[in-house]
Image 1 (cartoon, rainbow, N blue to C red):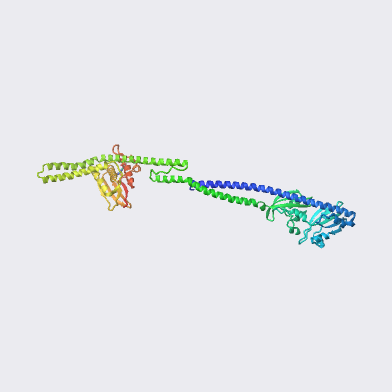
Image 2: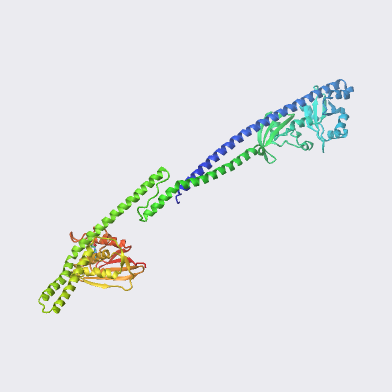
Length: 590
Ligand code: ADP
């Protein structure tokens, strides 16, 4: 995996931290709010269910007492029942009818029925409607006798909502039943808030609901979990979350009397947490916005932070390419300033070191050269001696010349020999001059020719034959004549020394074009270079020669000179078959 840049790491870290912090905060906040809201909703539901149950119980108790009282009265004086009924319930205008059924061995028998025609007419209800309701929803006398009190939904389609309350008298000899308008009970369940309240009878059928159509349809709620719990009789009040008609609801229930009815107050979870959800989704959006903003800021911040670092690395890249002395502006944070200062210091130090190195190298080249001059001394002396002998001879002959014409001829010969000696000495002086790296356009074959004049005699004295095979049409090069001559001299002398014991002693200097390079090959017929020597050939101070005969610097200096010319110097050899040194110098681009 590629390592991320510091900038990317900063951005990533900031965004990760921020996202994690936001997510944690929002999750916690949402959970706290949700819990709190849930608790509140349960409390409110329980409160509503309890209050409604109390109200229903009070209402039903009031009617139950009155109905029992009426039953008692009826038993003592049945004749005046209608008038009594009217006066007893004059204030309770929801009472529409009243019936007394006597209970005997033979069964239950209707003894009295009063339907309040005045009230019916104000409500636009017919007496037949009441009778039909009786028929459609008959009073289950057995159940009433067992439970003592029964509240029934006696509603009649399509729009007559009706409740029926049946009670058994204290002596158990009569059952009094009243049909009631359910308005008062409906009002209690019509809370108008998100809380839905409804009242069910002892078997789970609806008695009161804010949706009157459910009451008229006698809807059965016995399957709903809170209704089951309320009617199972385990606890009079309770709360639970359940799945009702495909939605989750939070419900509280409260029983009315001893299983007479039950009140359920419930709220759909979706409605409870709607606001919370909206809050959290908005908060998430808000958080996402903040994270995005922070990201943008982080990108800018990290760019500002890493810009000086980028400048540092750019400068380092320049320095590593050999352009010493380049410096960066010292700016930015203290840490980065100190790196900048150190880098500038390093850059300056590199110049110093490089200068030192160059000086050391020049010294090395110079000493190696002087050693070569020493080795060449015999050759040079011989080369100079020949013209000297000539000069001396011609001078003596000149002295004895009879005519000026003859003398002039000798002067001419003296002049040419002097020039020859002068040229040789000049060559040597030039070669021994301290190194300088001035490059000039050169023709390789000419450089080689010049070097050969310096060492040819030396090699001849060693019995070495020098052969040349110069190629044509080689490109010119850019180089330092003196230094290239030094390299060639070194290779030639090494070859001569290597062939001291060889039966055939021959050095061949060949040149050829080689793409963008000029190739120079110096081959000998010596013993060749064994692998262990080959490995160390170009290392400074590596020599196999006796003390005083070799410095071990020749080849390493030669290679560094050729590399300074952007060329290469390599060696090839098969032991027993001589050695070849190959020099490649780049052709000067015109
Ligand atoms: P020096 O000549 O002072 O020893 P050089 O660096 O010129 O230093 O040469 C290093 C060694 O390389 C020599 O000692 C010799 O062993 C080996 N060498 C150089 N040229 C040849 C050659 N033409 N044939 C065989 N060995 C050679």
